[in-house]
Amino acid sequence: MNNRLIYNISLTCLIFVFGCTSNKPADLVISGGKIYTVNNANQVVEAVAVNGNTITFAGSEADVKKYIGAETKKIDLQGKILTPGFIEGHGHIMGVGYNELELDLSQIKSYDEMVQKVRDAVSKASPGEWILGRGWHQDKWDVKPDVVIKGFPIHKKLSEVSPDNPVFLRHASGHAGFANEKAMQGAGVKLLSVEKNKLEESEGGEVVRDQMGNPTGLFNERAMQLIDKHIPARTLETNMRALDLAMQACLRNGITSFHDAGASRENIRLFHQFKETRKLAVRLYVMITGGDSPLVYEWLRRGPEIDSSGWLTIRSIKLNCDGALGSRGAWLLEPYSDRPDFSGMPTLPMDTVVKISREALKYGFQVCSHAIGDRANREILNRYETALAEHPDKMNDHRFRIEHAQHLHPDDIPRFATLGVIPAMQAIHMSSDRPWAIDRLGEQRIKEGAYVWQSLLTSGARIINGTDAPVEPLNPIPSFYAAVTRKTLQDLPEGGYEPEQRMTRVQALRSYTIDAAYGAFEETIKGSIEPGKLADFTIFTNDLMEIPENELLTTDVAMTIIDGKVVYEKP
Image 1: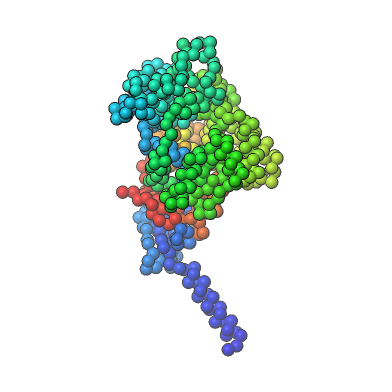
Image 2: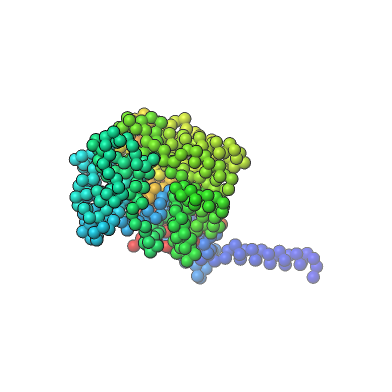
């Protein structure tokens, strides 16, 4: 046999081997509708093939046929659309779960309705048992309370229906809480004289009082700790139940990955337990709570935990640096328009921010700082800039974030792109907050720097979207709608608030997929539909990219797929 013949035979064998390998029958093929890949070209394809947990093909319906074998599972989209799995870019996974276990106050329309929910809970509780809940927001109530102090109700009605049960109800923002008399008695919160009314029981917080020094029941920011420390610790069984409920809620809402914004030692231990027992149903990207300094420094010494499978990664530190607009805790450069004696407050020393930022850059961690007010955002950007100047080698890929970045001074908008800082913003907050936020900030500040998505994007920043669940419902559709319409969920106002700041639909889709993955250093394994990436998909009943905007809110999640397996299907 001559060399030429041997070469031809060898070449034929190689072609056969590689041809068979490339056309190996897929475990799953999806076709029959538009597939938005969110790749660099924003390509729309007709079919996807999956082997194991990995995408192996994305292209035409004709070409995918060669991947279909006798054992291949086929999903016909029947005209529905498929996108990369949606990523919740900022939420509180345990809060989502506990919102299902405790009083959900997110839909109440009056203080009296809140009182009634507590009355009902008391009727089912034992004397002394705590009544807990979250989600109320006084600026969203249709009926205002009879008596209001600093914009909030007083506890009298609440205390009357719960004389034997301590009650603590967290504001939707999570930055304030409302207690009844029983809870305040147990915490030792008593009458202060008028002369001492300016003295706060907790630095960085406020106990709201009437003119006589009586506590109204409202505890702002760090003052909540006065009540929190008396609430019985949750059991492992309850925490497990809450996490399971939260993950099921994610799957129902098409969420395949979740950025958990501030996990405690107990949370992290639970996440590890769920991973080890294969109970994690959603991929978690975890930020360590900055409220536990020993925990932060323990992790800094230990180093990041990066999971190549994408199920559980811990490489970020969450710092809470100011409060929320709703509770007037957001730290502003100028006083609130509806409270001219007050500009909000920092809830963490700025020296701590720069110190943690230096250490994070040294040890390979990302810093994610909560900042809502324009002063808080400026102060955080300044601290990041200081730390980065000392570590110029990290300047190009640190991916430090500001969580919320809700209200910015115009001078600070381009600094995000210049410094490489990622604004992790929740579009749904604009929809929920904008009607009353103008009372807090006034027209000029609203128009120049509030929820300025397009200004940030045009300057070169990447935006991560989300809901801040359970502050807002986990469903991504209302947040997508808010991003592209700048309207409330009641379809108001005509044309939207500050319409020049709307995202395009492509930008909004990216903010929930590839840009959210980038914000977690995970864009190489997920966030777009490309061969080699994880087979995480969300299937929607309507074409989010094409339907009229007034139909967006009618869209549902039809199916959620993780690792190439159907984990939720709409009944």
